[in-house]
Length: 198
Ligand SMILES: [Cu+2]
Ligand SMILES: [Zn+2]
Image (tube, rainbow, N blue to C red; front, side, top):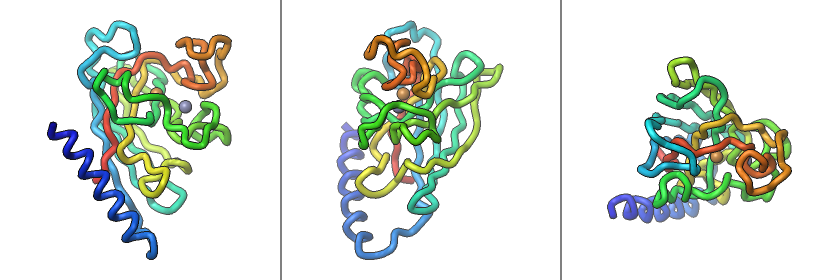
């Protein structure tokens, strides 16, 4: 109930600021935060037993074209790369599964975070250390916290497996492990959360 109210309020605030800023110059930086967690239900069809992945992801849009993403996540499972994306919705009614596909307003194929052909939501991989934790930051040129293609109100997703950045097996689109051009074969969804202005 309360999260629903917050969501409605956020939409009102966002549309109000859009119209009031449209005639003037947008003031940077714009900041947002996302608390990610397991969100209640096993994700991705696999066993989710023991999954406690969670932490915070921060966004800072510093100009019309640049957004810095910084993360601090714990208990992310196996050491190595794990797919890291913005998904279309912050709907966690069926855990992270109900958050929809990668945010892709321009109908591109899946790619890496710096590829020409990529979803807006493609942030590549985070690197998980031997203790299961990951910290880092990078600068992205498609992610916006304002305007028509804002990611505010959408979700950050952490996956169980590496993202192949669109260069892997795409022999059976729709089948996990063989659908590189849409998901990067990043496997189960182990943590997610809503991106909110901060
Ligand atoms: Cu994803
Ligand atoms: Zn993608």
